[in-house]
Image (tube, rainbow, N blue to C red):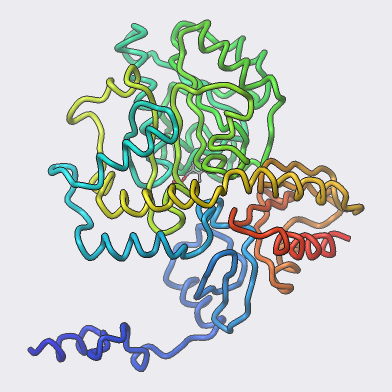
Length: 424
Ligand SMILES: *Cc1c(COP(=O)(O)O)cnc(C)c1O
């Protein structure tokens, strides 16, 4: 077979124009929904909008309708869709070297880990892919540290976790979720996790005992509805960990990298965590990259063979994430999030609506709780969709807002006008 025939056979356009669209007729929204419905598991309940293009804060559906994105893929697209600098890094690296596995070394890994260390102030990074894997890594680190350094008896380690948490979807992680929908039917679950009410430092103090190796906490609960704990909560967790020789690990997968107006949300309370999980915006939405960050005393518990991932720390991931954190810093997106977030908070709090029960806003990240009489968040998300803004509720009665941090003040004001109109 000639190269042209092979290309034609595979559906590739032999003229090098990408996929041959003649053999793939354009489907309408109803047909695409039907395909999803028939050929994919029903593990999500998405809005009925089928997107085909993105640029910066904008998304376009298959009919050419334009939307401003107020979800930013749950905070994975802080840098905006298809940021040209990240796209260029990905294109360039993918043509050179993508995956070697960690059986060999690659030239992007060391420099990127150094960049993360210099940016975040932690000695070392352990790179994974999905956010849930960074959390699993943190759990392993806390437990091994507990056995090796704290002297906890074998298999007795306890990790304190919080009600309303979201840390991902593995069987271990959903085992300590308080959301029945995430847990039901997936047991038996791993022992060793002790749930405590979120924001209740006294309950944490009461749960402390010599077998507690660490506390795993979201500094702000994102999926929980952008829940901000009392100001003294994280400082008290820090003090309790110091007092009881336990590790404080912050899951900053959604709250970190600028979303809350700081590199890490926990820094807003003036504390330093012993370990940090990051993911989502670490790669600006182009590729899954996550990491667990810690100092040597914690990270040194990992020895060869104790942990890993085939794709973890691959050169393509490193090149993409390297460019994504450069964009975050060079475009001052963290400072922008803080400044525009204050504006967003002021405007949201000023909305006079019989439907609003409470508004929380930290950086460019807001949760709007609606009264039950308002009829659920999805109704408002659908009205906003019809009017050119995409967002998604969390739980039943909370609207969550999280635009890309590249949004301009004018774009933000236009979107807030629309949100105000939706709610009044
Ligand atoms: C999204 C999220 C995760 C899980 O990340 P995945 O990439 O979906 O596995 C973990 N923790 C928090 C706080 C998150 O928001």
